[in-house]
Amino acid sequence: MAAQFGLRLRKGAATTALAAATVAALAASQAPGVTTDGAGRQTTGSPSPEMSTQADDTATGNSRYYTDLPPLDSPTPTTGPGDTSGTGGTESGIPATVLDAYKKAEASLRQSKPGCNLPWQLLAAIGKVESGQASGGRVDAEGTTTGKKILGPPLNGNGFANISDTDDGAYDDDRTHDRAVGPMQFIPSTWEWAGRDGNDDGAKDPNNIYDAALAAGHYLCRFDWDLSNDANLRSAILSYNNSTEYYNTVMTWLEHYRKGTHEIPDGTGSLPRTPSGGNSNNTGSGNSGGRNGGGSTTSPSPKPSNPSTPSKPGKPGTNEPGGGGSTPKPPTTTPPPSKPPTPTETVHHLENAGASNLTAMAGDTFTGKLATRTETKAGKAVAKVRVRFTVMGDTDTTFIGGEKVAVVITDSGGKATAPALVAGEKTGTVTVKSTVVGRPVTALDHKVTVTARRADALARTGTAALTCVPNGEFAEQIEVKATYKGEVADKVAVRATLIKSLPDTTANDKGPYFKDAAGNPVRTLTALETDADGALKLPKLYSDDAVGTFLLRIETAGGAILTLDLKVEAPAETTEPTQPTEPTGTTEPATPSPSES
Image 1: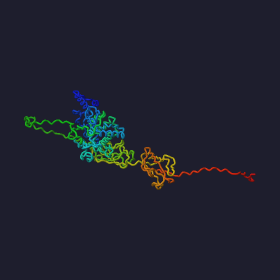
Image 2: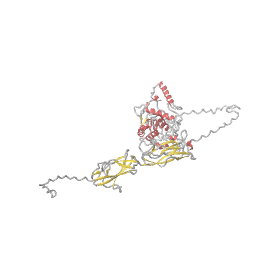
Image 3: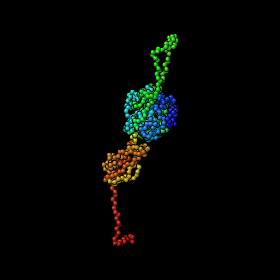
Image 4: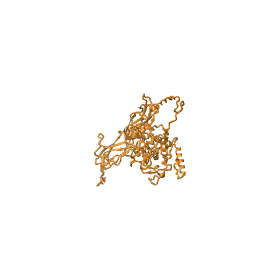
């Protein structure tokens, strides 16, 4: 299929034949059952689920998408951004702000999840299929869509999944059913945990292309998928919209954009024309502004009979229409056997089946795991049910791998065990909600606690004496190392105070001091933290004119305390050495005593 995009169509009779052959090749390359219109675009095709993914467990809820295919020529850049002729037209071009959002999302994921290998062209392909690049780039300078919101059809079971309202209409303006929202078409329940702030404005808005593109990137990179692997790439795309035709369409645009694309001004992109499902009354985009529907074709109604020509009566006594033969008996129909309920349909409630009161220090992995058991009304465990665990609220606590959502299938005992939780830096209580995928069962809230990083021991790493002269500075900068249960205690908050005495740990008003940014004396420092090795080097110490022994108290979160002596003393006085005096006169020898003679 890729070779077909490189063809350049010539004018004349050969053009028609070549174009027809290329369209046929494109159609043949798609999944069975996919049809194309005269321009080579896909028309109606029923979704072909391939994964055990239910609609409310995908990014879009398996909502409507656009089946338009790329132009047959390679997307060679144009000589100018506004040129819409030839292969460099708006159909291959990507609006400037939209393109910038895709590339910024790729750069962000390269830092946060380098093993994912997400190409921005994949985001562009999904953005094209979901909303025609935000309806041709109709966004403002901050990347938020202008005019009407881009909304999918109500997911009311009429041709699509049946997903009742989950956001009270906050995102999709629909309080009855959910709809896919924004340039990347997230349903509200997925955006609730997958939403990201891509433009650093403090909000997570599915109608903003920077937010939506970054969210889509994280969504595609969850489960540690490496998108350079074909199987992982396929799984990621199908998790966005679980349809073989959707996968094929996205892959076609991905290969197209990989060959090269170009930037066009915002608002000048081509509008999508062929929605999946072919319902021209509901395009899935409240902001498309272009031709809607047209994807499916319906057979014309049978030609009505001429009312002036009466139908010819049948022969009496025969079974021909209008005849007077024996009256046929109505057929006896046997009602089909009732379909047994699925395991999910038998779930009545959820019960906690894992650890309770889990606590972990910031940065650590919780030692216990959360678990939920699905039960019938009678309390019988239900196996093979999908349970979704979602980390709620504004917290940086996540499951291993950096995700805030995990879907687990219950085992034979009806138990679903969530992946291990990793405590973030934000301390406090964190709620993890478990719900049944595909059934409105009351959610179960699990509470876990994240505490501040702490140390239980502090030790000075240097041995030099801590001495100084009045109005001088200490030659030695104090270095300490913190540990917790014998292990390095990194990123632990530290407080250093020059105290009055051991009983009185308030800050001293004389003696040694630190300096603030303006050079003023300070005797308490609080914005201190150990490094990755648990080490901390304090700022320089100075002294005023007070002399004596002073105390420095260093303490950490967790209760580790170290008190050091600081000596300020005047230098010893120095004196000139004295010369010995020479003896004067003569010295008579001593007269021996009588005992010596």
